[in-house]
Length: 69
Image (tube, rainbow, N blue to C red; front, side, top):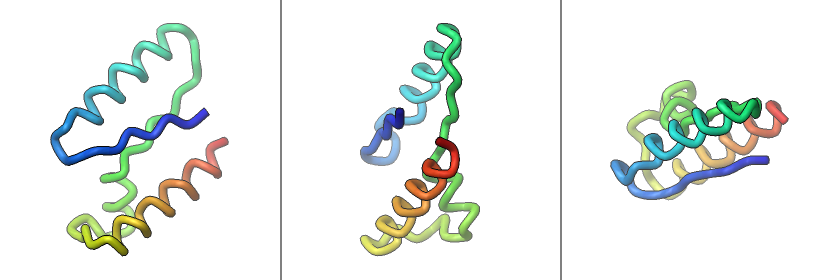
């Protein structure tokens, strides 16, 4: 299962994701947390936020998640 949080910068996505991860792990679920900013940095596009760059980053996230499953 993949749960993807989207929203504006500073809206609490990482905070909510961190809490959910801890809660699920406490219930003995295996959790892999993927941060879009980390994926963007790995692809050296950390300062690119055009519509095309966001779409490309989202596709990279999807590809990354498919490898994990």
